[in-house]
Image (cartoon, rainbow, N blue to C red; front, top):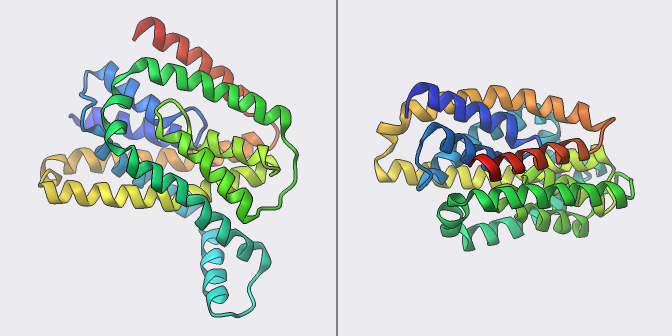
Length: 265
């Protein structure tokens, strides 16, 4: 893999990981267009995704720090700011489904799911339908609860299939359980952190143990750098965009992309 290939993959990851258009689907398409192999690419993508996730840590560092302080106060049985204390259990409980299904489906994610452009195209369309119903039946408020966190966490599992989008699935889930668009978007990013950080670190350890880190170091560095920078831009864009626009704009893009994939790939 050349530096240009790595930079392109990093850019694609950063721009699409947080915008509800499916980063895994776009990475698979980018690899096919550049003639790169798909088999075994899940580990590389997970590490680059880890770099993109650092953009979330930087962008939401105040929220993350306050949640950590609230957690420490909570387990110490001391007073904590309710706004952040109420986020703890939803994030913990909401992370469980993705961890369980991720472990169960890991082999299929790196083989069957990533070899079929049809799966990607169908998932893109199904995701668009989910966006439509989420916007149509949303009941807006900003209160989060453990029950809502679990429900959004189940929606996050859809992102295990290439073509679905983690942010799209979780924001849609948030809207359907009663969060307003801004609250659903912020919770989507915070909920993604434990799962993406965990999977990314595990895959990084796998690459190190396999001895492939030396040969992949340059590719991982450039892809990670571009993923981090473009990820920051994508997060800022999405939060501002969804304040006044619906998910259906992304749904329309996904349908067009699905048609292109079915016709040309």
